[in-house]
Image 1 (tube, rainbow, N blue to C red):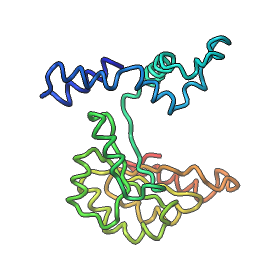
Image 2 (spheres, one colour; image 1 turned 180 degrees about the vertical axis):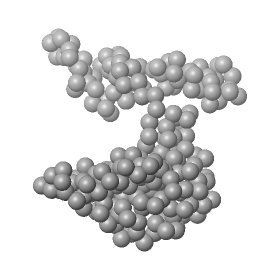
Image 3 (cartoon, helix red, strand yellow; image 1 turned 90 degrees about the vertical axis):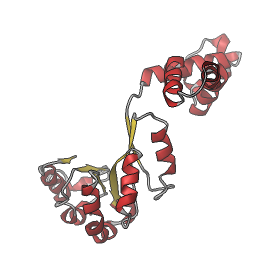
Image 4 (cartoon, helix red, strand yellow; image 1 turned 135 degrees about the vertical axis):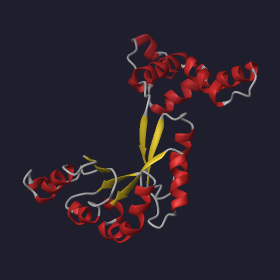
Length: 220
């Protein structure tokens, strides 16, 4: 963790002196800070401890939590991530996701929810800040909302090299896909985890998804 943070600070703040680098690193890589993160993540409750250590409050001991948190970081070793903007709680507010992308040194990219009348210049700006696609979430906004707005937005996405991500539930795809199938760019079919199970594999929605997946540059 110390090496990763040092490398991050060195490349993000080349203007700092060696002493200033050390101070920034020390503010992040220390047992107290790691223990705080571990507590927030509930790491202590998951530890296997001896009876004596457990009885003595080991699950909240700073040194143990800090070591455990470093082990969690090492185990997951997230090198790259694609962040998808959630609608619930955030709607079109991209600030949190853009902050995360900016802090990742290019390791994270994002899929944004945007107003249907967004300008081309705003899309250019979002792309420069790490946005690689735009989500149409019919499960949240409904099919009609996107069918009406697609003709104005889809050409802008294609012109800026942004992919289109479609999210839906149940049979919404049947109303959504005809308005999207001619999009001259990459389409990602996502968030279809709430189908009508009783329809089975022969159901109209699943068959429509299979057909859509045969379209060039479409991924399920």
